[in-house]
Length: 50
Image: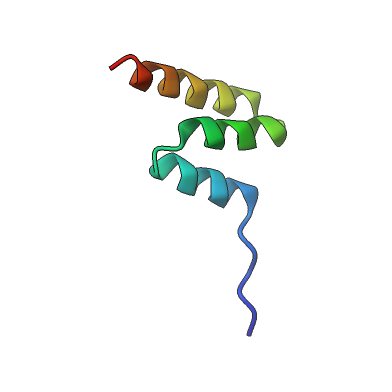
């Protein structure tokens, strides 16, 4: 039995949970999800201010 390959959404979610917001945003951007990418970039910028 082979394990199903992860989708880019699953990978992006795992990156987000790990705090890798910019990398998650890049995945969304590359997959035509600009609004979600923008939200993640904004969160990354806000978190870097602290």
